[in-house]
Amino acid sequence: MGQSVPMGRSASFSVTASGTAIHYQWLRGGTPISGANSSAYTTPPTAFADSGSTYSVIVSNSGGSVTSAVASLTVTARAPAHGDLRFQQVDADSTVSGYGNPSGLSTALSGRTGMYFSPSVGTSFYVGPGNCANPPTLDGVGCAWFFSEDPVASPGLSAAYAADFYDSFSQDLQGDWPAFGNGLRPTSSHSVITSLDLEPADILFALAWVQDDAQDLASAAAAEGAASRVITAISHKAGQITYFAYAWQSDTTTIYETQIVTGSADKVVGQAADLAAQGYIITATGVADDIGTVVLVGTRVQGDTLPRPFIAAQGGAQIVTMQSQGYATVGVIFNPATTLNYTFLGER
Image (cartoon, rainbow, N blue to C red; front, side):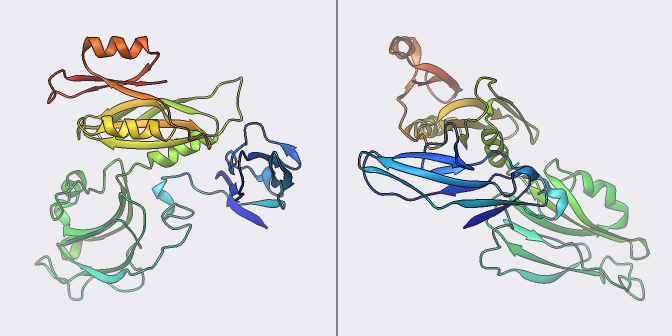
């Protein structure tokens, strides 16, 4: 029994046990791992030196204890970072576990048209000998670029293809693609151009790009938690997410689980309550100024799912009551549509 993961990614092990008051203690090479006391264990991001390491778990309660079989870890070639679109989705969340049930499309892009697929991954344009058209065409049609796409379970990931007049190349790069009108553009901070063909004789160009509007913040937050770091501040400006994450020198081994939620100001208070009910502490709040949604980052020690007391307070009297009952303010939501405008979120 074992597991293989690319270098830089975390490995996860789990065990199933029945009984009451069960205690778990995970071991690496027979040595207990501090804080690894749930039915599942996720390693920190792996290094080549971790290859060959072994993991097991002692499961115990008042009736006795048993040690699981040993699982080995093999570390393979380095994986691109989560959300790095430059490497054709190699070892990416979208493809590494398989495409599910591929039901994609192989087709051609004609001159002066646009096509996009979401959530999806797509190939670059097929390459080989031959010109766009022979003889050249000057009316914006007559060229075709072939490609394939497949749907994947990665929300926010789009494969886009577009062609237009050669002299509009620079203009089309900068704005939303005229045929789409939905924020898909090749020079977005979320995009990487994957294929380009310039055909000046036919007064045409074609390009393909991949765009990930999800920003892969969830994967970034998970990686921080696996490295014992907690996100404490976050900002979303013009499609660019910036956050700060901190580790504590006195505890560099605790693994944190994270959950990211986004919602409108009138919905996010309920989402905050749901996070607390799952044991998460809200450690960062932010707002996507360009689209008006609120972002909450929930963090908990791995496996610590006990609900946390939560309160939402509006107005001075409620806020004083919240504070007198020992609730810490973990966020303040401004909603001009409500009478009192501000809602304080408290947890303890």
